Length: 107
Image (cartoon, rainbow, N blue to C red):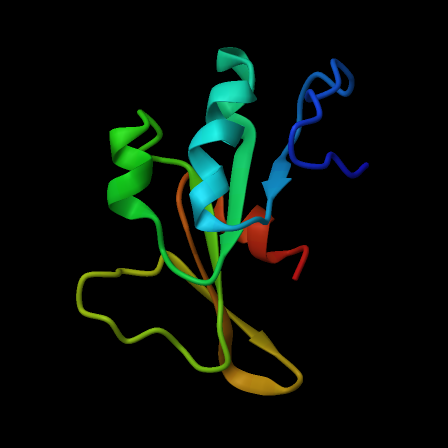
């Protein structure tokens, strides 16, 4: 299922991950448009980690995927799990949050 910016989140399915891949300036509106009981299901696939922003939004344990071409070595980011892919065996994605292994399994 694909939900475009401005469209409401469908009522079904009522559980499971909701993958969010959009510009950072649209994230606040997406969180606001997500029913409170589904916000813990949001999984953010971004080009940067969103720790402080998600904390400010009341989602400190939200799952995140950092898509990059090399492992993230920023000292402020402690990845929970680093995924290897055929093109980058040393790690191509960093995931953090409540369920990082589930998130990276879709990579």
